[in-house]
Image (cartoon, rainbow, N blue to C red):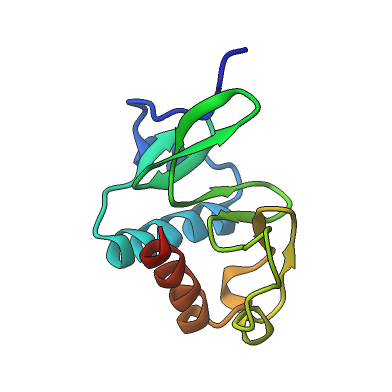
Amino acid sequence: MTIATRPTDADVTAFLEGVPEARRRAEGHSLRALMERVTGEPAVMWGPTMVGFGSKPYTNTTGTNDMFIVGFSPRKAAISVYGVQNHYGPADPLLDKLGPHTTGKGCLYIKRLDAVDEDVLEALIRQAWEKA
């Protein structure tokens, strides 16, 4: 089995510029800037559609692989934010203060970046980064 979620040499700026919807494209650039500021790491493409920051080993049924610590993907329906949603325990109380969002097993989904509290989003990213 080939793991698709690996760091690539693809250009993050070119990927974000290729996002079809103007609002989602702008949100991608904003989230990149926020995550670069919080993590102090450059954005790296992981697979064809995810922008990640840092890396750490994880183990699952395919063995031990590397995965980014925090990241995002500007998808059509919502921005998927990775690394800030704890799928092993109770939801972070900060999520109650974030604004409109949904969560999945390991993802935070935001339909409009301008509808959430950016300070709370930054705190979630910082917390995830520091715990890694």
